[in-house]
Length: 289
Image 1 (spheres, rainbow, N blue to C red):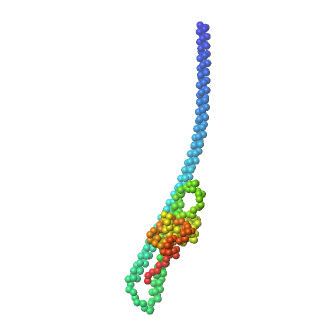
Image 2 (cartoon, one colour):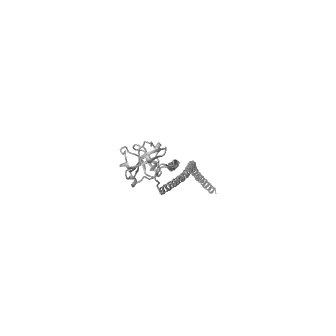
Image 3 (tube, rainbow, N blue to C red):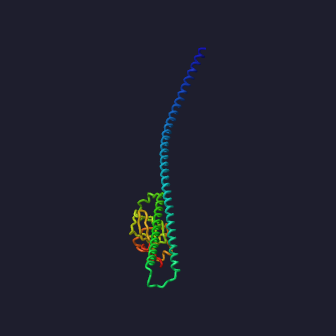
């Protein structure tokens, strides 16, 4: 009996020691596992904090870009509205000019219908003076209308240039920067008045244009006409056209044609003796008596 109890006591002691050992191993594993998870949690918290800051920075940039876009859109809408107003003014000036030309034609027809009267030695000075005054006033009105039309065309071209500046320009590749010598600036014809034979070009004194500059209009690498500059502004200039002989009848300048500084070797357009010079931009027209 005593032996049985002693054996049972030994067995229970061994079992208790084994259980205690296994419990300690499990506890160590759990502690190591918890430590690893705690470290992982710390890393995740750090990354989460960094991501939150990055998100806030991106949100700020998006908001800033949104404000800039709205401001640019407002400015663009304003310029478009101003351009529309100028177009209406140009249409009105053209309508007034057409009415004046119609009146001139009617007067000329009436004069043509009247029978010719023989010259008499005694001419009424008062009537002759009235007729001369009427001719002078008509010429002044015609010149004023032509000047208003030219002014409206220039203002319209300036507004178009401002609208073009609002459009984002493509970025220039770094490889293209600084490669080779600096080329002279190139422009385009933005408006062309065929009746008065003058153009408006989107180059100005900021691009080095002066009243003495020699420029020419090209299309497809071929010279269409040379320019006689009449007025230079910071962002555009106006000029008369000098065509080569027979060139005006074949190909005419139109908006979108390239404008470049003339090469030193090309002083004259071939056969330009039949062209128009700058003094013929605003010719005075005499009323037929």
